[in-house]
Length: 508
Image 1 (cartoon, rainbow, N blue to C red):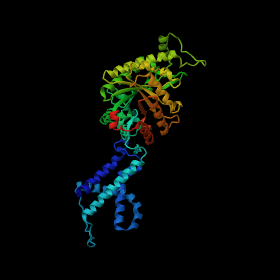
Image 2 (image 1 turned 180 degrees about the vertical axis):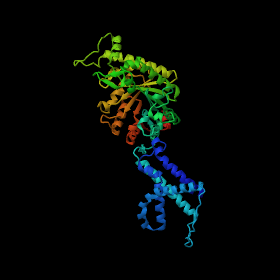
Image 3 (image 1 turned 90 degrees about the vertical axis):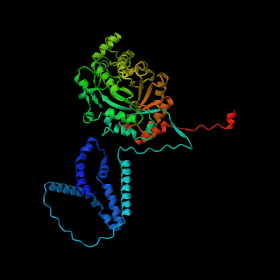
Image 4 (image 1 turned 60 degrees about the vertical axis):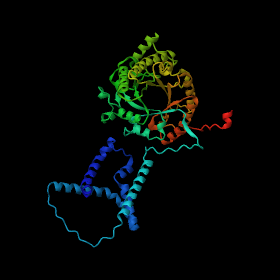
């Protein structure tokens, strides 16, 4: 024990100190803020022992010297340096002189061993528990315990709807938090499905064989496959997993002239490929290949394709040629100002046909490996009766090829109140096939901040009242503890137990 404590532990401490910056930057030892680092270095335990020792001596004036305890780290590592020097001299067989210690007399009577050991253990446990509790409550992104839901009497709770969450690797300094921050949420195990961002064709969060140049920096610097690791972890916890594939492709647009989407005002969209390129071009082939690869190589339960909304976009030369071929018109319809009339039904029909063509191919690639295909679609807030046609998302057509439509309810971005969720849900419930659509409730606000917890609760209540039975909250990194508490209050509905039949009710 003495050899380990005096000769080996100093070496280990020096190695850990040197490795600390690397561990923090690589996510091996995620710590948030100075308090967690101080605890890792042993300050909390040291001060707990110091205070206990001073109190045992009843020399309370020594408490004034506690600030000097901050020097314990440099002093400790100075001793480690001495130990390293001793190792170096020992390996060289250097001569060492030993001095005689002057005796000052008998030592005072030591406390009983068992009492001293028990006291020391009590101090260590108390210090550790206190430090851990403080850190969990004060670090910025720590998931504090949600306020328990109180139900009267013997009432139980049941979910009012099927709840799913979406999470993304790039939203967290440590990619592992993409799943950890979901699993830490109270009562989340009652949820149905977790969506994970698998990335884009040019920025993947998985090890796409043959396309190593398309791996994200997160994936290039990590020996583990991010999507595989997260999917397995969520499956082990009993969740279904959907992998999101984002169709935005800014790098593809820069390297493939003429493939980008042109907006109705004539400017180029910086991230979206043209609808013609998606449905009939090389980019569409690559996106379908990505869908098939994820479906065949990963333990996901579904593949979700997102960012395919074309309302104000896709009016370039290639699109016009496709539109002319489909409608016989030589030019785009224009409004009274001379701008492309994005609300002309002929444009809706043309866009919906092209998007249906792409989705059919993507669905076939997923179905080949027995995986369903989900498709994110936009809501027609100007007139809900359009059913997504103004975005190229004709719900009726897309339900013929996609297994589930995930309808965006981003009411706050549209400047709508939370109550607007009810009308959207009523329209979807009356027109879409039951069990094959999900309402995606986004937390983004127009001011760049998340919507308030009260607005979230109101939107959830309105959605359920309108008939939504599958609700997807997105994104998880925007959900605070207050948002989650509001979700729990809307999600878990108290149910009174059915009373046991009495003799009189049996006779009736």
